[in-house]
Image (cartoon, rainbow, N blue to C red; front, side):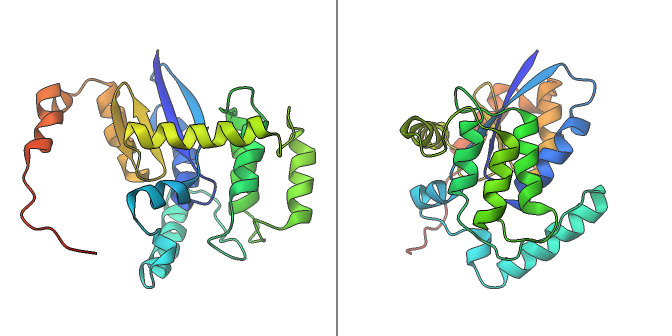
Length: 213
């Protein structure tokens, strides 16, 4: 059985679409998925990047594209009232619903739907309280252990080389983005393209130019 670690942040519409698409993409393959909430903003800060929603032009394109992709995939997706928003409470809630920082699929799906269905404010306090009541987390979202587990999830993801969400980790390989799902399946099916020599060969490609920030 193949174990896949799914690094996600509920702030990402691509993570939501990938979450919905993953079961169909892996149909017929024996696997288990470990869902690991991470703070996307901390990953961006580590790499010195800006998120798609922080770049004028790219922000609008991102929203148009995910709405189009959702329609193509038959997935309900409604933009929240404001985006980006602070996802920390939702991430901590997901972690609090687990023992070791990896909530189950039902918990993740419920939180994703809270954000990406209905077109409401994802960070509304009253809505959050109702969401928390419905999920009945095992621990308090303000528990220091919960906060530390989320931090550890994020730091371990960065240490593995994660630079964005959604990212899927199998063995020592990372697959980033919604459009990487077919690639992920081919790797599991041991397509020759993924032999170690070819996988590692890109690291020998030289950088022809370096831009200063």
